Length: 130
Image 1: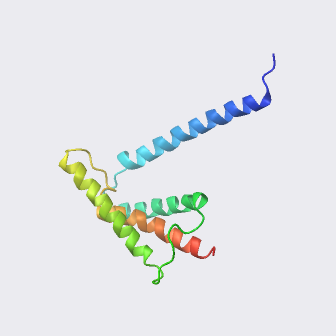
Image 2: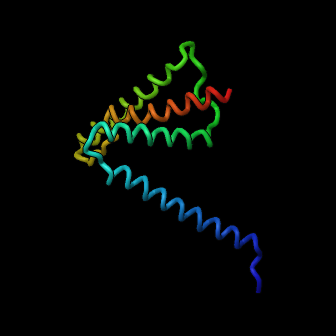
Image 3: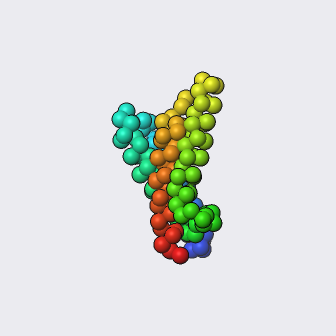
């Protein structure tokens, strides 16, 4: 008895997607919990780089600007990362009060660096695309 090709393809794709999902999950867990850099400058640059990578990946999902242009060009480069930094700082203080483990990015500086890396990539690559 022969199995139709489309079912075999579907099973292979499902196995590949699940394997890829597990690898991405392991990588994100490794970055978040295992890789805490002791040098603050290196950690800040690392989070900005990770933010830039996420910014590039986000362009595949949302190739257009996420918010409308303001009257002041580039205000999103400061406002967005500041909000993200304050949000991450709030998450870190919330977790500290509950005696939970806090990771590096749950601080203002590292949250700002990550969001700034993402914002600058999105700003330049979506602005030039218009």
